[in-house]
Image 1 (tube, rainbow, N blue to C red):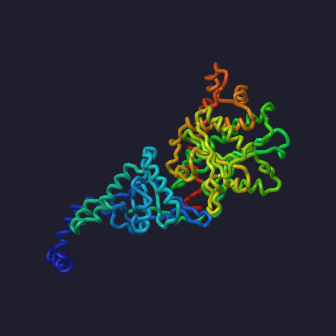
Image 2: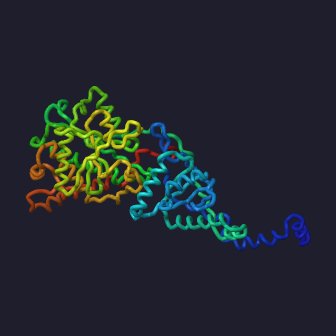
Image 3: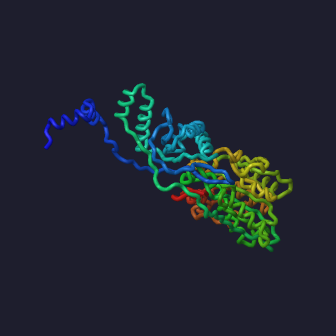
Length: 482
């Protein structure tokens, strides 16, 4: 049986007197228990892939470290919380050099609300993240109210690290919350059995197919961005896919009528692996050029690649070699200029030689040009590396449907002018190309159907149906990466 004097004697011999007083006080003034609660939120992992022997993206996926913000004096073995608008390429490299264990990037809920300068900075940060590999785990998450509260609490804890005295640090730590960021599961592993699919079709011209020339229309259907699950690819290359599908729809109607069945084959290719050096087009060329039983590309007028056409009022035909006058490629460019002028769209040609020292091609048409096939890429962009291609900012909402519709009408008009060597007005007036019933009712009092107005009823459905989910060519699973 213990008595009061025995308890006092034990405390006197084993516990300092100041702890008997301090511990109850610390317990009373402590704002929360050691672990108050756990908060779960969705994160998206940075891309991880290997291309031509070079590693890219984050090589780690597991996280179990304390959280800090960018202004912490020491980031070693910490998970850094940073808002996307506060991050720069130099800061990203700095936290890697300081030995940070992980990075959680907080994305604004409205990506379209960023200013033009902020969007340019985001493109630069994405490029810095994916240009090479890193051993730290990098995740992205949309900033919610709960995540904002966590971020502010972590920033308060970060200020504790730089307190002027030990007493100030102790008092600050007692009034703030600490967070441990945990991402469980298994470490990422290499996916060795990944396959890339192409979708291709063909309209055979009138006559003996093997003896007819061919026009190929190509658009890669996948998307790219810092995180696979955030790669919507609204403009690059949802716009190119939609234009290809509309071309196929209109031409299939014309090819089915004896009156408008030209002596020309048209091949359509939705290629996979666009952002991993156009692997889909590479396989397509191998199948049709290296295979002796496939004459489809033995004689081609040209290959037209469509990429990033959902905005702007200028179309640029990117070529590796300027087409000769009187060649089919030059004739198409002239038709494109005429169609653009009629629609208020400026058309220009951009010449860029293929850099054989680079491991990857800048534009998809370069794959065809390297096989000595006439080819070019039609895009609104001035160059392949503007940052707008392959970004998480390339969402469905970033597309201007009116611009996409107008650009589609220019491409359709130019290609039909080239195929039939005449204006398309008569073709549309003959009713060989069908449009939705509401559109025809709208034009029942008009002698001719306006192509732009017709497309405005069709393209939004195609576009939003195609871009409703992310399209990542680098497939990630819970067990690994490519």
